[in-house]
Image 1 (cartoon, helix red, strand yellow):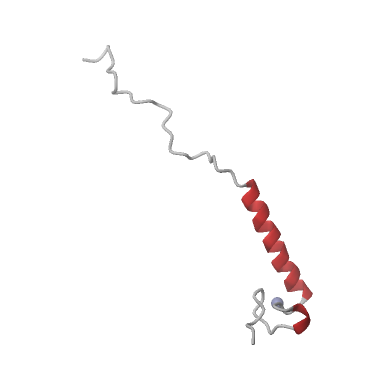
Image 2 (cartoon, rainbow, N blue to C red; image 1 turned 180 degrees about the vertical axis):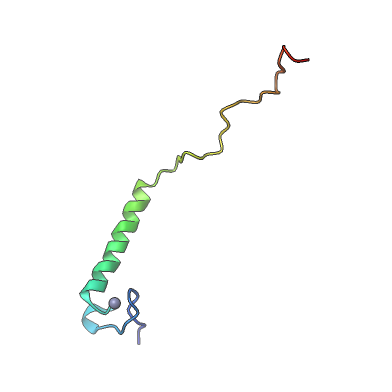
Length: 66
Ligand SMILES: [Zn+2]
């Protein structure tokens, strides 16, 4: 039972299951660590929050117009 190596899709080796080799096992570990690190540095306050720097120009009415 067991599918192929999730990294390169080759037949797995019992010693490195579920991978086919130490190399693929290392790749998977690297992906894991990389993913975790990426989430950690991810900034929830991105530059694009949709906030308008100009607060309602038509709210109070311009005294020069009208
Ligand atoms: Zn592999």
